[in-house]
Length: 331
Length: 251
Image 1 (cartoon, rainbow over the protein chains, first blue to last red):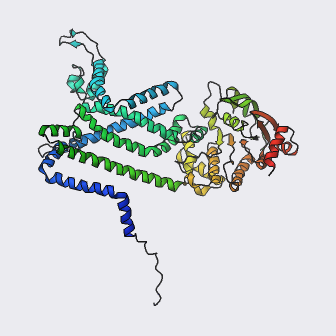
Image 2: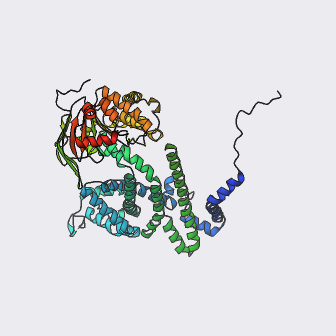
Image 3: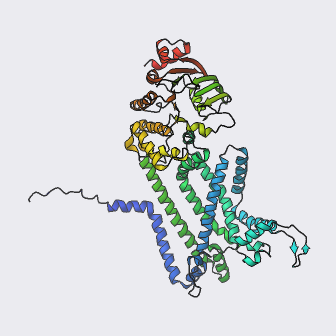
């Protein structure tokens, strides 16, 4: 046939390479620079024996003798521990923050005042101070209350006067922290039974719950009151309206803010090194002071933190873009 | 189905007072509404007509007086307001659809969580109602994709899905473009003809004339005139009512 049929499909629009490149350079040069530095550093860590030494100390890998090599091994120290602390604290602070936010918007004066007191107090205390308080004051005091301060000898005579403690809590907490079963009945809880990691997780959760509650409150208040009125007029009670109508909309609005707090929390876990929790900052300080190699240790440490946070930040950007695309589509 | 004037009124408002700060929104309003009646409340803005409507399902609480809905006194100790609200549907000026749910979700959420109907049953009821209000093809669409008139019809269907005995309409067409007002009023007219008890705050005099059994004119938080549509339009008696009608009917 002489006459060619018209093509069935339109030719695909080709992307103009120069425009594409210009856009990338204008908006993504920072990322390209970051990736280049990252590659160079990763290369140096692999080839340079000193940096390699620092890396192995700060982000240890199990040696073949230390069997079995499982995910749990990685979670005990270094990067794994940093992530574990971040994740658990984040979950606790989200749950706590949500409840505090609901108290803050409550019309009940008792709930409102208690929650506001909490938020103002913990937003005002530096995180490092809260960590020290939990580690050196609150936990030992709580242990004294639970375990009691009186000392009893093996014959059952009180040798040092003091408080008696709360027996069932004493046994329960000993069980929780992993005191051997056969010793629970005969020993009292000691302050050192409670792992530093848990102490600082409480400190992070309590402090970040105060910040998270403000994020939640802003999110809930960003939803027009017509939504609550419509829900209530359909016979839903307050909690049903919150759970099925208000919170799903509020959480969508505050996802970027929550993710931002997650990044802040990840960075703040470095404060755990102040109470000798073996996460990456503590290991770096140990490494650097042991071998007088501060620059190498800090370089490796920064490398790890920057990669963790920038990966998270890119995730947040992606999330935000996706949510905005959703919104554009739906309006 | 003619209104049932023999039984007890389904809504009884006795001497309702309500203030917002220094503004007296209601000054001793009393009103009986009987099952099957369509009562239209008109009045200038700020006259307390929306407040009165919102007091019937306790979205606003009155300061003094008494309100009895379907035999339940709203301010009695043993009354669960959610039980009252199950029987009283409400349609808002700004629709207030749930943007996080599809049209179907908007219609089923309260059926499932409040009426405890199962998924299949609640969806069947929802589809039936959507057909009735003429938007059965939009079942899986999110509200923001709908026009104002469609949104308001979904909102009416959402309230109806609870099988209420009473429907309250708070200026249902005031936020709509002129060409969409009719589609909403048509749905409301059909509902009135089925014998639904309706209390409607509106400026749509055509609807009032066609559907209302009684018209209440309110001003300054008081019930000024209570009359039939015929008397309202043919020989309005009260001076302030004449002024008001002169303003809204002059075009």
